[in-house]
Length: 113
Length: 113
Image (cartoon, rainbow over all chains, first blue to last red; front, side, top):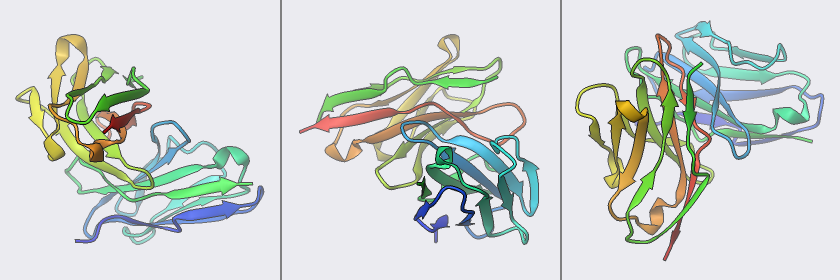
């Protein structure tokens, strides 16, 4: 079946612009995660949803970052007033309710100029 | 806080040689342990996982890993490396009651033909 998909794959934004990154999880997967991967680093947790409920947003670096999953399926990560330090690959992952295995999408590479 | 250490940033091996990638974790109890592989422009693919039971676990693509509680380690091994194994490898843990992954900084594997 189809895996996790993310769009766009690449995004260039001027500093100060708002961006929206989309994640389509595997069908039927209840849990959805967002991670940020800076160049040369491992992914770092941003936020976690179970269905439409955002259960953990402890990793969001500032109030400029906002994530939603209104119908418990597709999720959007929004970054307002982008800064250069927001440049990274943003990875989305999904899993079943009881499973600890997370399946990752290809990521969105955000470059802020 | 829990952490994951991958001491080797880069490793180069010859095709056909054996491979061992090191991973150490810091956590009081036994975490759930994972190894992921990331090829350029790709998302993370799960190689193998350890939750409990037999401390030697087998994964995809001929990889295996051994959990050693006394050393807080979960090293990844492969008896004979193929050129297609060149990629970045990440060790990760889930600890406590949460589902979020904590990743190491990764080991970049280069395979010489």
